[in-house]
Length: 136
Image 1 (cartoon, rainbow, N blue to C red):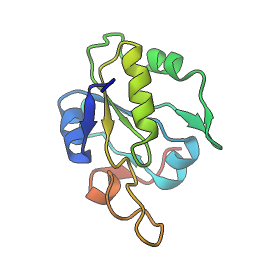
Image 2 (tube, helix red, strand yellow):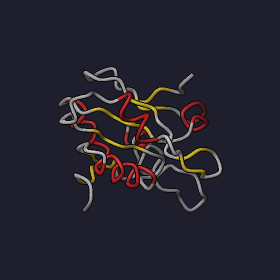
Image 3 (tube, one colour):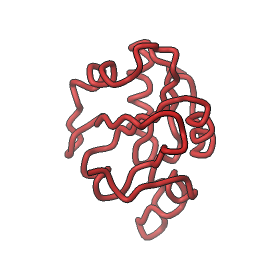
């Protein structure tokens, strides 16, 4: 594995309570319309850095933006989150290559789709972890 590991949403929440920083790599539209994790009960605010732009266009500035926003002390663990856990794996790998200790949140924020295509099965928000309606 080329990053520190995968965490369930509840394991990710525990890691955040221990001082790790959440990095939400979804798009601005997802943050605004689907919701965001609420990390007010932890010591750190989340970072919001798009891994891709709408249409799947890669963000060429991802590592630069991460380096600017993350603590200079690269020993702080980063927990990467996307919709379902795919983009966050790629982001965790890239961040690890840049010198960060990086984890991926399995199931992502919304989780897997049910038989009707709605994301109601698992994921951060469906497991009852703290969530805000949207990022302005």
